[in-house]
Image (cartoon, rainbow, N blue to C red; front, side):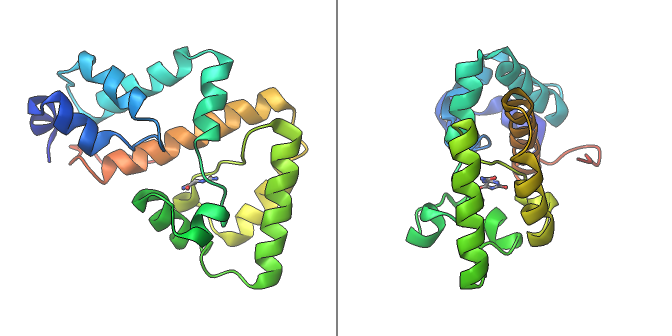
Length: 174
Ligand SMILES: NC(=O)N[C@H]1NC(=O)NC1=O
């Protein structure tokens, strides 16, 4: 689908197709629909990012809380969204040893206990080793820094999901 086809979508089709570019936050997609027509994929992405940036802290925390833990309950119970399942699988989260699974569960809980929202990282741009390292290191950050970093990771995830849905006229790099 190219950007002209995106602009021609009905509201319902737009939300059905793009409603999960930010995990479990179709409200964002519904809100940016009114900004069409988009001159490019980058413009659509920028509109989503601007909407996110304009949210109060509580809204940004809400976006982070909509994200499933890496190798967490949703993965084990098969209730991840298709996008999250594919992303987590690519980072090896579905093939952990029991020791690794226990470690990531413990680190996720420690992170959530400290910040009140889950650790979020763009799994498609990293790997298991870097996830371990980032999860440990980022746990030491200040809450405000982690809120900002988590939202930046959400935007990376969103960009890759958009690129999977819309033909871009220029090669986007993360
Ligand atoms: N917690 C977390 O980062 N989850 C997300 N990351 C990603 O790339 N896909 C996810 O499900």
